[in-house]
Length: 447
Image (tube, rainbow, N blue to C red; front, side, top):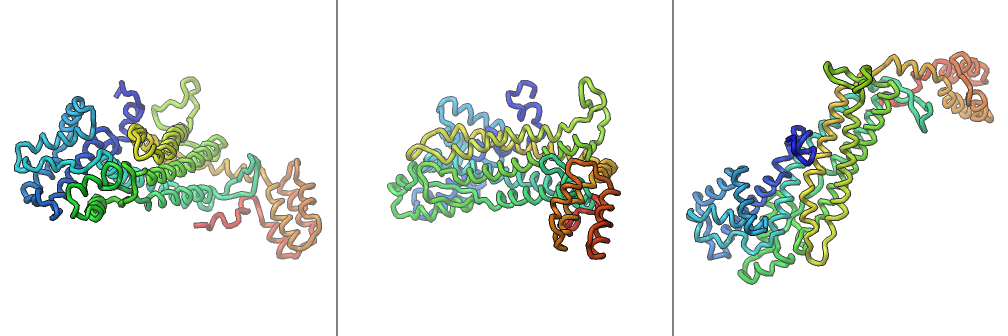
């Protein structure tokens, strides 16, 4: 939308639209409705509540259709009610009563939102939203990203490449191994997120089932609440104030931020490899790299990803630090902050897709890579002095330092040095066969 305030709803809307069913205002209202309907059904099935007889199959169908048929038009009706109530959760309760007024459930309307505080509904709705978005959007795109990095790691597993430590030439590696490092780092964080429990509570105004017990002292409210939350697919938290304390959310956002930080590191490395010449990028016909320099093909996807990951992490870290804090038994600061969960996820998903797009454009410049290695025979100072140490030749490091530091080293000068060493034939022959391209250790065999 050209008038959107946020780029996630404007420029990038089509790239994050999968999150709309989970983090839009419509999604929040619908998930509140799901919780309210589910609680109404759970109460009807509780034998200790004699005033609420078990619902018949047709009545259950009416409630199921209330959710099934809930669309944007219905959500706008809830928002109209909210204009009068100035309370978003109460508006959902009134909406349900309005929809059921002319049905066989009319006589049971006062059991809608029974004994609930708003946060009983909100925490479960948000838990369902987080779980749904995680399972259906976040984790799948994380897996796609890791799969692509792994694929490139296998493809370039044995391609030798000059390393840079402190920006200076260092012991060679392989392109694939460097990709594999990031794939494994990202995979570890993704697996931790996949195992993260999402918690919920439904225990009243201060977490003690006060009103519940006042109305029905013989009902096992703890057992009913545990069963209800588990049936929603969430883990139960019995120890809360008015709010579920959001610690699990903090754990999720910290995990996402770690994943994002690793991806920033990856983006910057790829950016540097492109700048150095290790990678080229496929030219897209009609695409402009620079408004004034026609020759340029900029690494825009990795730059876009890095920028959006920074935005995501700023929000994720605020969510993580703020949400576990609430004055006494409840303050409202978490409510407005949680409305921004979708934004932090949106910038994350957008970034993952940008990196994926950039990876699809990469072209390995093997000629450049080989030239870099061929111009750095000084790299063999490390294996030579290590073999000298093995054979107890004194001052091995110092002798190689004298030979190589600050000097132009060639293939010939390195081999001349090796031939003059008093080494066993087997060691000397192995060193003489060594080149910067073959000095890659076990990089080519790591899985």
